[in-house]
Image 1 (cartoon, rainbow, N blue to C red):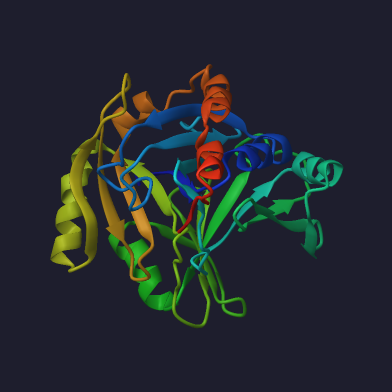
Image 2: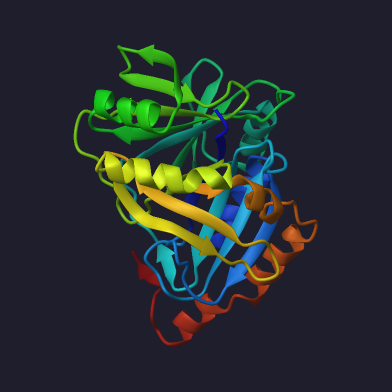
Length: 297
């Protein structure tokens, strides 16, 4: 009951095009931008050891909005998609108008709902209604191979409440609170392929609950990818996290809420920091000069 849905982590190969999509098409704001010289102890940037950046984007502060975490590894230009991430749904007629104005491809999949893609191929669903008074992000959908087993994991072990079941579409919608972004599980009718673009969904809970959560997963013989660990961000709060994996190998981060609220405060310089980092990023020129291409993960 004390858990909070935070963000989904996307690996991005083209930071400039990705920034255009989130800022100019969706209409999100850059909430903070951070640069790191070496890989994350909890593999936040994936299985990479080199220089990377993290950009948080959303419709409002992370305290009460579900946001996207964009991780950019300087040496990787492209990632391979799987069927694990099934889409993010948000409500914004302005985003639909922006996409049409900018010529960003849209496909109407049902009345007043458009499918589009972020750079890298990540699917987004835009509901053509005016922005709601609260967070426009409605749900994140993840593919699963065994819906009953996965539903048990998320409800009985992680404490989510089932809100809707659709037997025809083979989906289950769940969440911690009605006002938060929901998690939808979609039975894909086969095995889950995470590709190399695999993401991570993040939640917070009170710091003192993290050891209990880790102990529960050990007791239930569930996978723990990263036991309780502290993560440092230069000049900002240190947070503690536990990284789990559900029965489909979806990565799940639980972070101590108190420190995360400090870490995640909106940085008024976030937009300028991202623009500066992109302007100073000479990795494309370096690879071209050496007649090489960035890695395709």
